[in-house]
Length: 129
Image 1 (cartoon, rainbow, N blue to C red):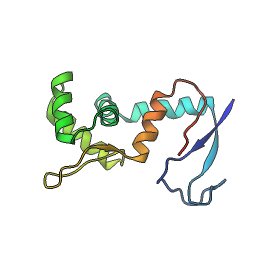
Image 2: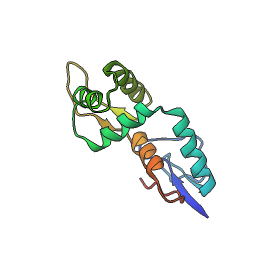
Image 3: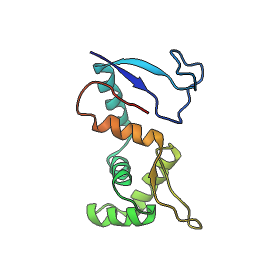
Image 4: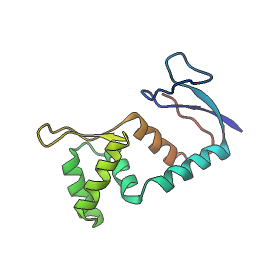
């Protein structure tokens, strides 16, 4: 079975084939390819990063508050979680404020895509914008 794969909103691909007119593309992707992509993401992100990513999606808190809660709940050193949070922000998977400007931690378009990919139970690729 072949599904349709669309890059998340806001992710532009230069020189795209089968374009949608705004820089996004829709690419046919097989069930095996979805599984391969999922394995690639799982090998790229560590358990702490996946935990932070999923909890940012679930909870509406500042990053500091979220990381303190996760540190207590899962007995993970706060410094480890802070480092992994910064890595996720550098990868544009999440966004959050600064010391001067507190803001709720949020998933970016790519972060939402990665979470949908990791939580996809069926093997068909369905990633609408």
